[in-house]
Structure formats: C-alpha cells, structure tokens
Length: 158
Image (cartoon, rainbow, N blue to C red; front, side):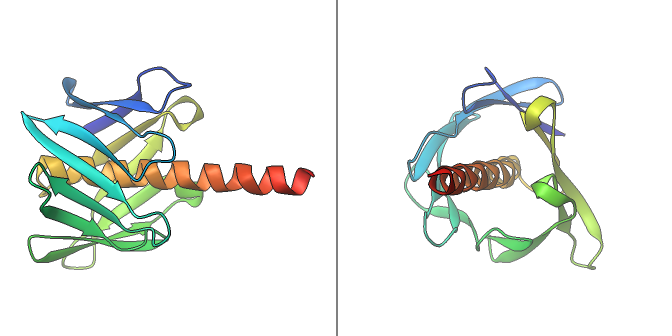
C-alpha cells in the first residue's frame, strides 16, 4: 500500500512510503504547472494543464507515460494503451475507487489524516510510478479545489 503524508503540515511537500519504506518526496508547489519526483533513481515530471484539468506523467526524456482526462466525479487514466477508470465514491474527494475491467472495484485512493494531510492508495496491478501518479493527481485535485474556494471566498467577502 502506498502512503503519502505531508512532511510539515503547513507545507505542500509530501513524503511517499510503500509498506513503511521511504520512496520519494513530492512538492505540490504553488501555482506552477508541473513538479518533479524521483523514484528508484528514475526522474519523472507530473504536469498539470491549468485550464483543461488534464494531468500527464512524463519520464526524464519528456515522453508521456500516462495521462488523465479532466479529474471530476468519474475520470480515466490512460497508460500503455489501456484505460483505467476511477470514480469518486465519497463526498469532498475523500475517496476514489479504481474500476476493474469487469466493472467491479479494483482499488482505492483515500484521503486520511488530520486536516486531510495524508492519503493512501491501494491500486493492485498498477506499476509503482502509476500508483504514485494517480495519488498525486488526487492530491493536486484537492489543492486546486481548495484554492478555487479561497478565491471565491475572497471575492465574495468584498
């Protein structure tokens, strides 16, 4: 099982572990369109397209390994010619379920912890970099929604 936890709660940097073993750290950053992480010596870039809501996982050469469509209630991740469906199964983006080829739940991504500062992913059958990517996409989605809510609140507050 993959686990992400904020390194220091006010920051946007997460430490990723797998079954208690440290894997990488991932800074969500502020306002940028992409951020990098290293996994088992290989470099990756997660690029977020601001207006379309699409995310891409790129290898060190800039080749797209995986992409998502706009992350909403139902969304998909495309990688290696296969399409993996996800569905939000709890309110406030607390849980997303990976749907298997048979239409049944095959894995989950859950936001947990104090003030939702942690998340876990149990996505059997996916390569580790794809599991990290799916978990990061959910974390980025949460950050994007919180930022939009803050902007709305500030503009309405006058």
